[in-house]
Figure 1 (tube, rainbow, N blue to C red):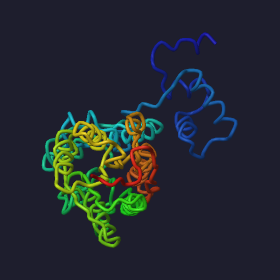
Figure 2: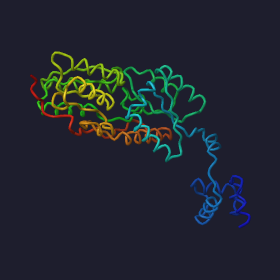
Figure 3: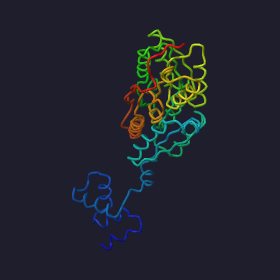
Figure 4: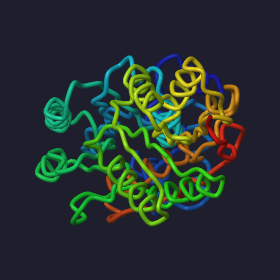
Length: 346
């Protein structure tokens, strides 16, 4: 065993072949799970590899397979907003958990706008930095879709589906969750409901807004929508404007936890009790929705699982084993103490 103990340097396939008494080709077959060696020989080779502490040379494998063993995620949002946004923290946790289980790295970069995002895609693909990318915050008439299709860079759009099926997507039904929230508030007696939405140009914002307006009209309610950039500052201004009107809403649906918690603070500062004077519904249901007082009624989504599903789909697209879209479970309304029956105002 003295010969095997001399492992100060990194073990190689040649070392395994010599100790197993077989060719380097046989070792390669065994280590890669390919046919060509007997079960006993494979078992002996794997045991020796484990004893030597052998791991594949990922750089060499990437070169031979033209793989980077990395996936990318670009975020065209301000860093100060992302630092406070629970959605992306949970989503990235799901992405990373799936990639790390496959020994694939995650490259994250912040950019100022979609034009810069496209430029980074071109550089990453040209430099063989990534094998594929996750695309978030799909926009109406999004220029990234055509750019990625033209590059041939494998991609999965998070929050599609993409019109015409140009790129595969991972998505879920958001409209039905909006309808559920509005119907719930209406059942509590609310007739004036406001939607504090996200970025107006985002496809998911428009889907939610269309659903909100349609159900409000269908039920004969009074609805108002105001857009934000997801920042607390903008969310606070919109909330103050809505609650300062001559006929303020008795219920408000916010497009993110951060907006909802900000709105809760503004409402209290203005002398509104929650839920006695105004009911609040949040979207995404992160920990901050549950620890504030009162805890927020929210559309609950398993965001980490969403990240896992999108990443699995991307890896399958990279491997050429998947096309089309994957639909994930939609959010469900979780009632808590921030919503209650409407109270007559005097």
